[in-house]
Length: 176
Image (cartoon, rainbow, N blue to C red):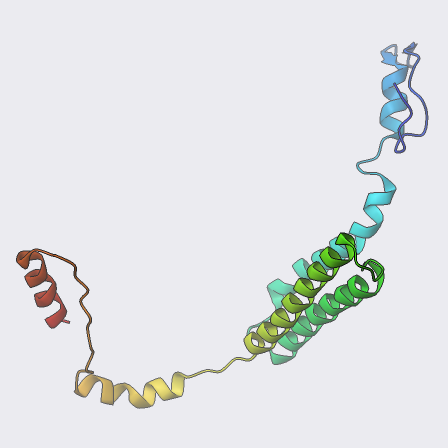
């Protein structure tokens, strides 16, 4: 086998070993399982903070009440900080150098789309983080709703329908 960056040694000799308990062990299998990792270190380093954040949120979110405004502000604030930190990094570190090339145009187009998405996400998060209870208004207007039926306009769209079908539709709409 060839050397791989995530393995410490080269596995080429297949020796049979006898363990202390008399079981035959495959030397290549032992070396391979001892030195393998689930993913190369180069890939696990950038993923680790995201996995830690997801783990913390999974531990934290089940005990958060919807009524708690501070928790909503904290979660929205955390999300916005992470989002804008990413966008700052994206803008300052990954944009190609200015020039009349396809790389620059594609890079600017994609960064612009990500920034616009970030602005839209920010507005959405701020709007959805506010909560208002309209229970009192509903309770106050319940008598008005029950004393007279509200007027509703019904638009019936048809195109070369038979008279029987239109008649049933009109009767159904008038019964609302």
